[in-house]
Image (tube, rainbow, N blue to C red; front, side):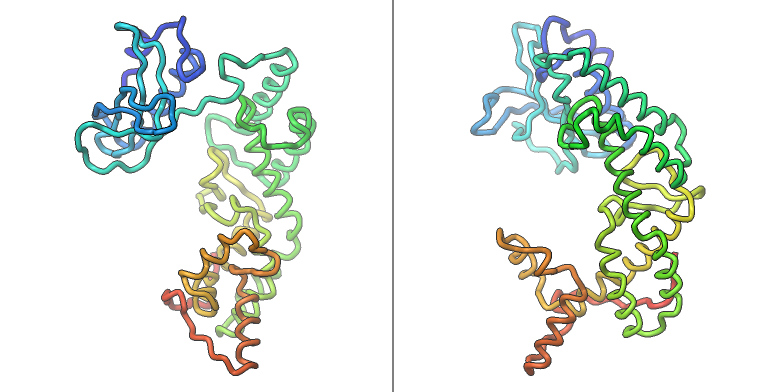
Length: 344
């Protein structure tokens, strides 16, 4: 994992994975750092070649680099001109010539669209990039940023023009240098929309949860707040963890969220999550085999066929009962005890 040695061997006059030497090395260095964080002290090297039938690099030689501790790997194809390395590509269909133990995760070299050597960087483009980087630096500091709800809203309002200027609020162009800003802005904007929408409801829901004593009460509570739970952004519903100073997200680095809005919102999601899958598996009318068949159908409509809605399954059970059709419980084969009382 010697970036200095690569710096020596790669030439300025060549491009690597369609970008400059320096940008390519920066991306390689990022991958090396991830290996170090995972406990690797060296990379084990295995020869091989690209086995992708429709790939222009098919059958070209390269190497698989495997972390000695993590077993994570990086596959690279090398194009040589004598002793010069003319180009390097990562490979998605790499096969080694000798056996090695199973790998875990495979890294990929990520080059932004505006880092390609063919990209035309205009003054207008650089103005947008610099504005985005400055905005990102305001909130992403070297030490984890303690961020209240009000501070988050202030930052979003302050840089609303920046996001509109980049792409009129269209986040599909985030594979550019400004992507770190647009991705962060999108997540925080979703947080704000959700927390502000239910700001006055979270507290009532959490208080009502404390009064739940039996499963029928729990079901009543969950049905009342099912829509509020379903509206939670993915990044808020999953991966929010308690920290000494607030809450951290697995999907957003270096920010600790604080304030009543986050406390009440996260508490509600945690309370709901405790029982959601247990009840869904108990009362669900589909087997584990049927669910992927249903949601994988091109005509599946989430609005009317709510596979992940507890209310939907209970209604269907009631309809079946009225017709004298019994539906067994726990069709997924998953059973767990319901812990009724308690909150985060």
